[in-house]
Image 1: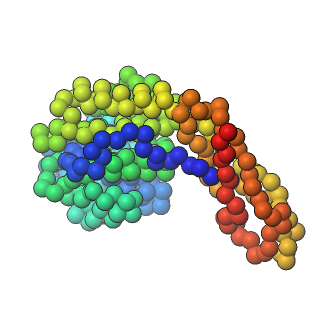
Image 2: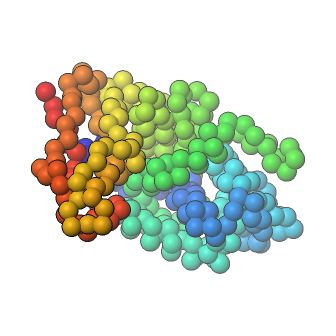
Image 3: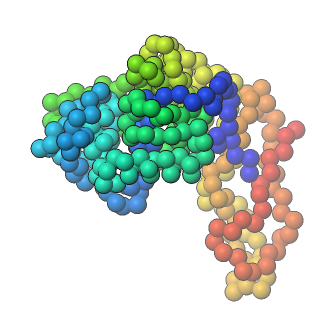
Length: 310
């Protein structure tokens, strides 16, 4: 199946190594979501604050060592206002120390093919050799949104509060309020990194990510991301072909305990086309044999679907 996941529509200096600032937190959030998925924590798990976490400075919600917040509240603070103190508190809780958590961040980066990336901390405050690229940021952004789409519950919040309304939260990503279909994802800025953004949006089943690094002003980072997203949505269409686990057909099985089995699609699949070509595609499934031979196990790939263009 032709799968457009991860297709690059436009790039410029995409592998240039730059300081990510708080866009770093996309990886921290990804590891938090993985911990939730494994059952290591729940959204109700109470997270304490160490002296180290409380001393982070920069963007924060002023955690103190006498309080705890739930994982749900921590995620809200990290995603909406880029809270450094909450990010470090989560890292320490999950891994025992920020250092070990950062090791896990780098391991995940290698797994995702983020070859331009070295993380030195979990929050993005400037540190020597803490570097990544716009390409690598797109990889971890895609992984987070694809594997854990529920994160957009937090990344699309415009305004909210914590501590019974005492702590007001306003999203640092202005596109959440102004851009149609915006789903997040994360801003970042420091005096050295300047203004960074990984912006995501979905319209008509087409999901796009625009990464802008080292913009000279906040206004330019948002306008450049908007231009990239506008280009994608105005130029391309996503044609959905199949839904994960959708029944395709029944085939005969020889030498097995069952005489037949069902074929289903392994994943949601589709094709990305320029709008000028979107009516010029048809789908055809080619099966050379109508009978397959046992043993057949759930998840085995029998044939690949082919998309034929007129």
